[in-house]
Image 1: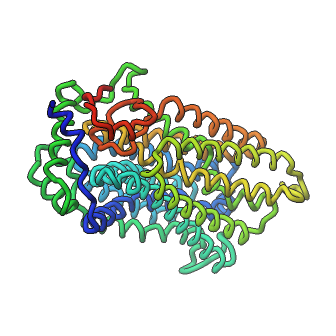
Image 2: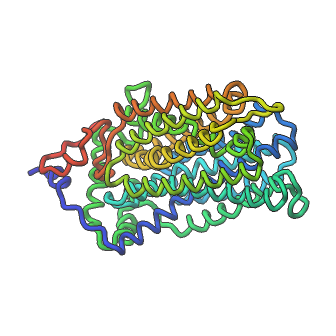
Length: 498
């Protein structure tokens, strides 16, 4: 039998408790960039109204100030892939931590909206770098049996970061008597919401200094001895020789096929699998999830809740997000990626349509928007069902797929491009929400519901199932729906082509 067939039919070595502990620790540390992502992107939630009032901003400028960090994140994500391939995953993490630290201080001490936006863009660059390198790093140090669960830690970290940001916002606002009120050292509470962001940036920098480099990056740069050392530390009882063979064989196949790092392909200039990653990222954002986490305080205030109650609702919603992400982590390696995404798309479509219907029943009372009768609770429940549907599916699973659907030689670059698309989509949703909401909230949520429905069609027709495959085997655009099962059957697996 041919060597390639034997390679795919080797018995997967057991993942021992020692391996569990080591790999999980590394994955958690690597995913801390997701915490920065969630914290930085949501910390402005509690400060929006105070900033708008202090600087006298219009709705359009307010939306741009909130979304400005996402432009920087798109830039950082686009550059991060190339930097990670050239300099390594760990150096990119360190640069991201440094940039984010500087941004936290600058944003907190901003004297006007212009320099606030500038510092937010700078911080976004750091977050963009971290958002690219984290899923790549986790995928590259994880055994195949655990890769889905460990890849989901990126989204779990994002949700925990969102929770931490909203909780700190609520504490500062409650202690000071409002986000616009004076707090320590003559600075308003909203400024401290940004200044406290320096703490996770420092922690991330220290963590990055303690992490080993990705073994796949080391193999790609002809440092096989160091790669073997890392694998022996990460997989003390695993089959290190097999891991090395698979990595080298995959890289040699890519070289023979003249696919040595280029993203170029026949579909609008890119490889089809790159477009799958880009569209996964776009759909993840176009359902409007970050409206809930960036504007929820303003949103619930607009329909009759006090500022303190709105902040409390936002914190509870973020806790819900964490809990359902844990559910996704428990299921992603058991039932596969595609079924989870499809179920999530259905849940998001129904809940968003319900929110659109609820807000279509809103009325103006003393110049303020209000939901009367049962419509307020209905909107609140629908919003949390939406968060649950997203958090249990599209939130974590997209990051898992982005970490494993690309070939070794283009993984970091393709991840960078997909993450950049995600940040751009995030920016578009964030900057357009205030004017769209001012025009019509039912129309706004109706548009998000439409994209949620389209995401179902996209997954059903274009997204591959990679459950149970090694990174080096998951090199096909659309394997059969039951590929994870069929892979276990004793038959030859051809060299994948894309």
